[in-house]
Image 1 (tube, rainbow, N blue to C red):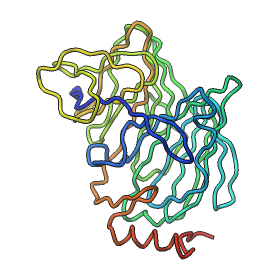
Image 2 (cartoon, rainbow, N blue to C red; image 1 turned 90 degrees about the vertical axis):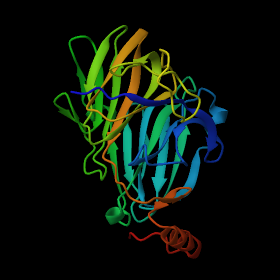
Image 3 (tube, helix red, strand yellow; image 1 turned 135 degrees about the vertical axis):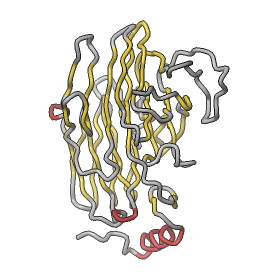
Amino acid sequence: MSIRPVKRIVESTPTMEGAGVKLHRGFGFGETSEFDPFLLFDDFRNERPEDYLAGFPWHPHRGIETITYVLAGTVDHGDSLGNRGALGAGDVQWMTAGSGILHQEMPRGDAQGRMHGFQLWANLPRALKMTDPRYQDVLAKDIPEVTDDDGTRVRVVCGEFWGQKGPVEGVAADPRYLDISVAPRRTKRLQVESSRHAFAYVFAGSGTFRDASKPLPVQTELVGVSDEATPSTVGNRSLVLFDSGDEITVTAGEEGIRFLLVSGRPLEEPVAWYGPIVMNTKDELRQAYAELKDGSFIKHR
């Protein structure tokens, strides 16, 4: 086994999307190769309803999959397929936009006004860019959770881990999406296939992700870190990008640590991207927006 070195650590940055939703972005709308097959990751955590209630009104997607994981509050959704529903605490929606879909996502807080969730965008390979759209809505009760002897808890949303298989299936990037909680002052080694790109996103507690030699400090943007890096604790809203290897190691701080661990097989295809549409070439991108304009964007019945 080889421990994956930490390649970069980045603090997610405040941004605004939709009709005025304030959120924090871990990565997105930039260089895609290091996160391939993933394109974007947002943390839409907020306790002020006025900062999220405007939501994400009707908008298109093509060529990608969007993964929404809700921890608090509710997200109401609707689409051009006629689907309607709501995601509650602990629920997941994996939407394959494929050839094109119009949808909306409208967040509502819990009884205390809190809203918390994540959205991840995964790219589709060229052969599946124009596949039929589909949804996989998964209730919290259907997501397996496994706990080991030292209290580490893992919710397996997608992929296989510790003998459990997540309920989301048939995803092009063959990803693994885990919600991991490690008890205070515990150190865990977690396997990640060497053929995959992988990142962790910390959203509660703190800890350190160490390679075989030295840990890395928190950086404010995705830039290289020198060999002289000093030890640093990784805390709330920090994203850790790992280099190659087949396992990671994490040591939880005094309050424990909770993080998402996401990995996927890189597509290694060209990316042409503008807004909510991701294709392989600029010509395909122009065609998609021309179809939006002339009303022929939706291909499914």
